[in-house]
Image 1 (cartoon, rainbow, N blue to C red):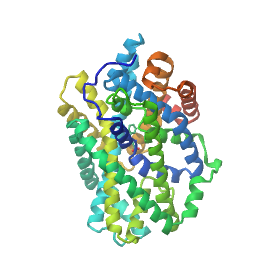
Image 2: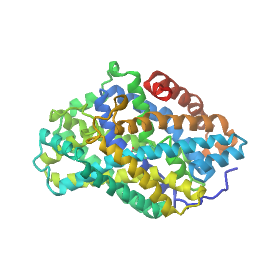
Image 3: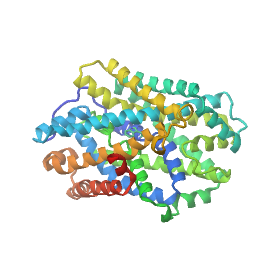
Length: 457
Ligand code: TRP
């Protein structure tokens, strides 16, 4: 029997809105900023291949599991897990998984907002023609100038997180539904257009070789951990974002089908971004492994050179900001839903309180590019630590626990009714991946990498 519980925060108006919202959460800076820069830093093809493998074998199965928890529990992650645990006579301690997700959300959003702020700043730069004549040298200078100014960074970070808080305080379906319906398809079209341009004028051959030539010598255990982390980050897994979105999913929607669509869209966008950025990197002799600035530096050069570059540049960075925005909303929503349910605070106060805390942590992240540049305990600055702990420790750990909870603890009948497949073969394959493949793979990756040193340091 499927659960008859109702969501306290409303429902999506259809399965399509869930797909758009979940895709809006998944597609963001992770695809367009993080995927290309990690690929560039880690030698290309082999990283891409391992990443794709993790998305397919671990990511999508866990995504299905998270959505199942959400729809079954119809509450914020903490309470959904608690309700299911009670129903299934399991330990209440499982709800710690939801609390861990809240911490992960805080940490992730704090550095995410800083990068989204860069994107916002670039919208402004295009408008004021700051890079109309940029070449590979000056585009690096523009980026360095931006990140070395705490005041500028603070301004854009504040603007971004402020707009996220504002929309979350209004309630998800009102603002979010409308935004994703128009903007997500538009972003997709822009990406395709720009990729075609980049393949035509850039060095398409080198880019293709770079993205697909698998040189396994560059694969260390740390690179594999980065690929796992990126799979979780990009699909928005491991912190409850999909649980909360799943909790607004109508009863009759097929969870496996919708998750498969979301996973494919997300992966496609990451690959599109790769084919947009690397042809330009190679054609202009830019440095593929330059780190977080890669997308900004690369695209500035391209926009300066291309016909109607200003129009394209403006649209592109605006859409990137929107993509980041729809993702950031999903990072804040679980915390807010939880505090509305459990603390009895209003949605408005919850949003502002949580948002301000995140804003504060974000300040430390943005200072690590300038004032706190030399504060690098353990070889990483604060920004890098937030990114590392979130993507490479908390999200995979959260995903691992989701897999164990749904795969091993919740009864087969319950998950089968939410999974709702007519095909036993599909259900069994999914359950196999979730029970064995996901937990074992994440454990091996952890054991082999410095992730473990970090946990037990
Ligand atoms: N997936 C988003 C991106 O690729 C970021 C994101 C949104 C996220 N919600 C999340 C990451 C939840 C981890 C967990 O940009």
